[in-house]
Image 1 (cartoon, helix red, strand yellow):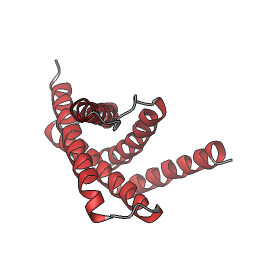
Image 2: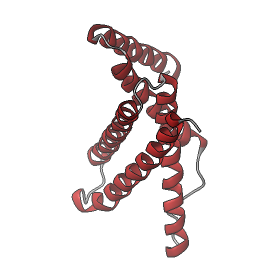
Image 3: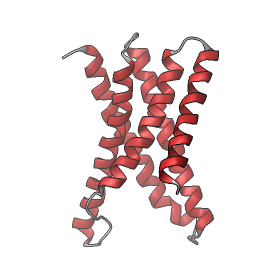
Image 4: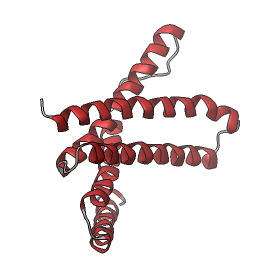
Length: 162
């Protein structure tokens, strides 16, 4: 197997484990921080989860780029998606084990919409990180980021919000 793929597979695995430790830790600690569950606290939790996702995915892609200089941009994108998919599968595994040991209904069957949403967010984060890593000019990197975010906003408002 190619060195690039070996590094990517190891980084994806480590990043997914770290991401799930952070997500599960936050889920355990959150009721102590926010005893009342209202819209503000739920929105803050979603924001923290998105920040952690962004932090782990971008740092993993930077690490892959540093370990293997000149790595293909497609491999970086696939690595970001791999982190999202493996992380979600680990989350379902953790909750399934909790369900089996505690006989609770913490977990339901994985929903296809959740997987696609999580993969979409990982794709956006990966694409933005890839632009930062691969485009040498700050000006053109910023232009590409604005165009990408603008295209996402256009797609979102024209096809999802109706």
